[in-house]
Amino acid sequence: MIQRVGHMVSSVGRGVVTGVVRFFRPHGMVTIWEHLKFLVVLILVAVLFRSFVVLPYHITSGSMMGTLLVGDYYYVSKFTYGFSRFSSPIQVYPEEGRIFGRLPERGDIAVFKLPTDNETDYIKRVIGLPGDRIQVTSGVLFINGEAVPRVRDGSYELEVLPGEFREVPQFRETLPNGVSYLTLDMTPFGPGDDTDEYVVPEGHIFMMGDNRDNSLDSRFLNEVGYVPFDNLVGRAEVRFFSTNGSAALWQVWRWPGAIRWGRIFGTP
Image (cartoon, rainbow, N blue to C red; front, side, top):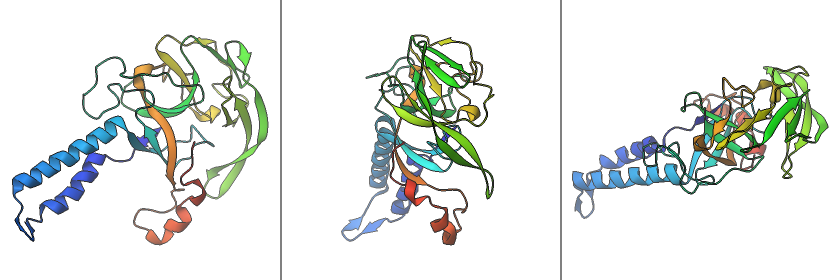
């Protein structure tokens, strides 16, 4: 799961409130009407930025470990796949379809609205495109009848309890287009390790989490299923901050130890 980092409109609003109480300047009084015009312009700029450019998101679940960690913060580009009704906080796009739409590529990490409620934000990796046949057999991913190369790549130290770690087998997968990434295999008999063959419908994509045994994704048709192209929000581009969650916002003295310095300004 993924969570939006506040609302830029609210942030702008808080900053403007401070300015609004200043009614005087060296050359005379600023009218309330001028303040209101300034506020409207700032709100419009914030809405346009959220609708057309990027939006910050906070990772709140472990379904994409060890690629994305709980406590990571990412900028998600809104224009990569074009714009749909889910791209803007207000209704400025058509009810159906995308403007300047472009299909994602296999391997992209994308944010989308959960198809079962069209509200909850999820983040997963794009595995299947329209017409693809997808299947998982004994933990091995198959695309259009061909096994995706899967090579053991050491272990991942997973923190199961505070201060208690477990080594989880880690594998490197390489998709047909050359995109390579690491996946975790917590158990050889996970609920999504052996599936029927899925045929991705037209206008939909097939999403999976890198933490294969702890990801609710397109393998589970009743919970997530095939993701409509219109439900895509954007592509994760830049990790701009990361924290391990050991320090509360008010515990300033603990911030240096809580920040994952090595994960700041990285890419997925």
